[in-house]
Amino acid sequence: MTDELLVVRAQLGERDALAELVSRWRTPVWTYVRRMLDAERADGVSQEVWLAVVRGLPRLREPDRFAPWLFTIARRSVMDRLRGRYAEPPAPAGDETAADPAGAALDRAELIAALALLPPPEREILVLHYLEDLPVEDCAQICGIPAGTVKSRLSRARRLMRARLEEKGYRP
Amino acid sequence: MTNEEPRLPARELLERLEPALSPARRIRAMAALIAGVAGALFVVGLWATEPGPLPGRTHLAFGLLAAFCLGWACYGGWLLRRRVALFATDRVVAGWLALVASASTTTLLIVLAVQRGEGLGVALGAGAPVVVVALALTVRAHVQRAALLRRRRDLTGGT
Image (cartoon, rainbow over all chains, first blue to last red; front, side, top):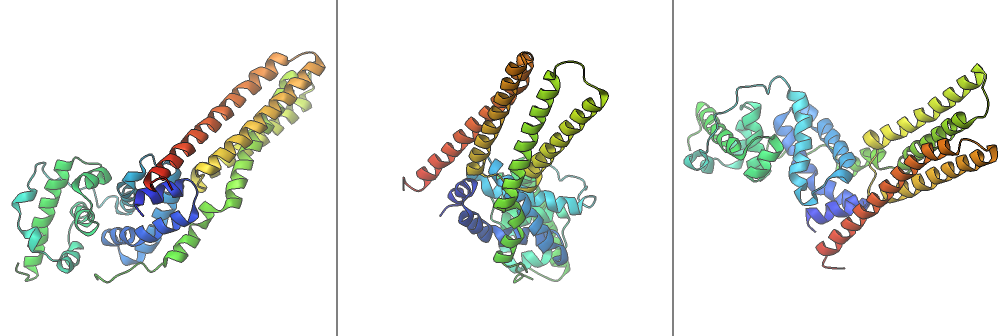
C-alpha cells in the first residue's frame, strides 16, 4: 500500500491506516532526529514530531507529498532545539554535485560515524539525502532553500566529511 | 551507532498519541465550541431583543452569561486547533451539529421575537450569519470528504 493511500485513509479517519503510517515512518523520523540531536532527546523530540503530524494530518493538502511534509515538521522541532547553533554563514550557491567522487566512496557506516562532526546545515542535508533517500527537490522543500543550494550544500558537506575522515586516518 | 533504533516501540508511540486521537476528546471539543457559540448567540439575541430598559444587574448578568458561553467556545476552538485531530468524517459530523445548533438557536430567537412583537431584525441579523457559516463549513466538509473518498477509490482501483 502506498503512502498516499495510507494518508488518504488516515485523513478519512481510519485508525489502522494511521497506525500503519506511524509504524512505517517511525524509524526514518527517529533516525533524522537522532542524527541531528543527541540520543537523550531523540525519543522525546520524535514523539513531539508525531503529535504535530497527527494534529496537522487532516489539513495536509497533498497526500502524495507526505514524506517532505513529515520531514518539514521534524525539521521544525529539531531546529527549535538547535537554534543559535544553526545560524552559520550560508554555503555559496551553485551546482557542484557531480564533480565530487568522494561521495561514492563513502560507505554508510563511515558516513554515519562522521556525521556528528559536521555543522548542522551540512549534517542535515546529508541525513535527508543519503540516509532518508530523499531527492534534492524534497530536501529543498524541507529545508526551505533552492535546489541549487541543496546541491552546493551537499558538495560542501561531502568535502567536510572527507576532511574529517582523513583527519581520523580514513583513506578512500 | 548504525544499529541504533527508537527506544519507543510503535505501539507505545501510538498510545502516547491517543490524547490527540481520542473520540471522547474530539466530541468534547466539538461540543464545547458548538454549545459555546450557540449559547452566546442565544444570550446576546435575548439581551438585544429584551423589551424595555433593563436594570444594571440584568445587563451584568447577560454580559457574564455571554462571556461564559464565549469562553467555552474559545476553549473548544483551541482544543480543535491545537490539541485534537478532526478528520474528514469528524468534520462532516461537526458541520451538521453546528448547523442544527445554529438553526435551532436562530429559530428560537425568531419565535421569541415574534411573541414579543419586536426584535425580529436583530434575531435574524444575529442568527443568519452563524447559520450561513455553519452551512458553509458543512458543505466544505462534505466536499473534502467526497474528494478523499474519490482519491481512495482511484488509488485502490475502484474497490
